[in-house]
Every structure is written in structure tokens, then in C-alpha cells.
Image 1 (tube, rainbow, N blue to C red):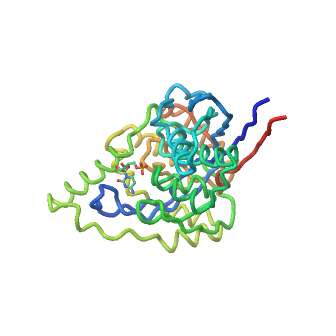
Image 2: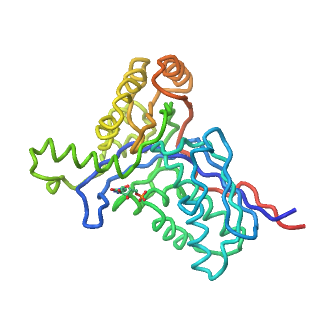
Length: 312
Ligand code: C5P
């Protein structure tokens, strides 16, 4: 039997996504409060002649299997730093919605990185792994770290946050994905229009909400519901107007809060407890406004090795 390593990586929802102005490098400064939730991808790596990726799961057909996949880029980046070949087969068992605003691609990048490090015995420090994650994408460091964190900069500079209880969520998965760059561009365009063409230069510095951080720390779902915000929501709804009906269906069924997850188009509903979650999930399913519905909770741990088999 070949040696193999399997890593489990969570999805995320942004409970606050405050978007600042456009920086000279084209990214936006953020105050991004990430919460990891219990939907997971599993990434398994085994030695191979050359780098290749396979994917299983209901939405596997939507996952790119070429070098654009963050899992491939993670393996190549770690191999280059350690002067070795990225000769590995990466298998992704995908449960996180694809292009849904839940960091599914980022999860696979962080998962492949941790798995290759273990398989190859690279012994990379946590700092080096976080550096590579930040090179791969703004959300990738959080997929490694998990639980909850405040992301500054473009989202990659993380401060871990304490979470004082379990938060229950329902996610409505939409048909098809939304492109993250397109949603940010639409956010800029909407700001330009509402500013009467005065530009987006005077957007205030994004700051985390003290009330929101308090609600996370104390595990108070009602207080968290009152504090959640997503500056990309209007842009996501502008590009995908049908999301308004999904949000309304969840709110109408008693969700404490309804918001677009990250850049969308997945929508997230904070609920009081699991029973309330099932009620909201039923209403969303019968609303006909989404493709599928998931009930879960958070916080969830970051990327974790769950299986490691060595050669006999
Ligand atoms: O970092 P990542 O590759 O995930 O970002 C994808 C795209 O999302 C960027 O190319 C950029 O258009 C947009 N983005 C942004 N500001 C951020 C994060 C992402 O404009 N803080």
C-alpha cells in the first residue's frame, strides 16, 4: 500500500465583511471576521509519477483539475521551496459548495499544503505554511487556522478570535457560482454610482465591529445576528437578483439573520438552535429559491490531518 495523508478542512462564513477602498495592487483592504463552519472537504495525497488532481462529490464536475486548482498550486509552491518535485496525486473529496463564497477552493489549497508537508516530511514551520497560504489567496490562511479570526490587509493577516459557544447555521446553495473579482468590481461600481461619480477613494477604513466581536466571544446568537454585515452583499444581489428571494425565504421562516456568504452566491442563515435550523431548512427547500440546503454549526477547527498511512 502507498503512503497517504488525508487532511480535513472546513468551509467559512464571514460574519463581518467590511470592504475598504481599492489598493494600488487592485485588492481591497478588509476587516474580515471569519467563522469556520462544519462543512468539510477532505484532501488526500499519495506519491505519484507526476502531479495530478482528481475530485469526487456531487459537484466534482465543477472543480478545475488543472494547475489553476489551489491544491495544485499549494503542492507546487511547497515543492519549489524545498527543492523537490511535486510528484503527488491529490484527491479532493468535495463537500463545500463550489465557487459559493465559502472558501471551498481555499480549503483545498490549505489542505493540500498541510497534507504534502506531512507526506514529504518537509517539516515546514507554521509561519512558512501561513506564508505560502497568503501567496495562494486572501482566504487560504484562514482555512489553515480555522475556528474564528479577524482578517486585515486583503484578509490574509489574521488575529485569532475567541468563540464562546456554538452558532447554528443554515446555508442555501445557489445554482452556479459567482466570480469573486466580479463581485468586488460590482461593489466598486455601486459605490461609484451612489457617490455620484466622485469615485471610491473616500471609502472609510474598514474596522471590526466591537459588538460583533463581543457576541462571538460570549456565544450570543441574538447579539451576533444584530451585528452581522457584509459589504459585498449588495453587489452579489445586484449580479444575482434572485438571491433576494432566498434571503427573504430564510428570514420569513424565522432565521435570526440572513446574509450572503462572502462574495456569494451561497446565502447564510443564523438560527437559534438545531431544531430552528431544520425548520428554516425546510422552508428554504420548499421555497424553490435555491439548489440545496445544508444545516451545520460553528466554530470548526482549521485544516487537520485525520489519517496518515505509511508504507509497509
Ligand atoms: O486573494 P484571492 O485570489 O482569493 O482574490 C481573488 C480576487 O478577489 C482578487 O483578484 C480581487 O479581484 C478580489 N479581492 C479583492 N480584495 C480582497 C480579496 C480579494 O479585491 N481583499
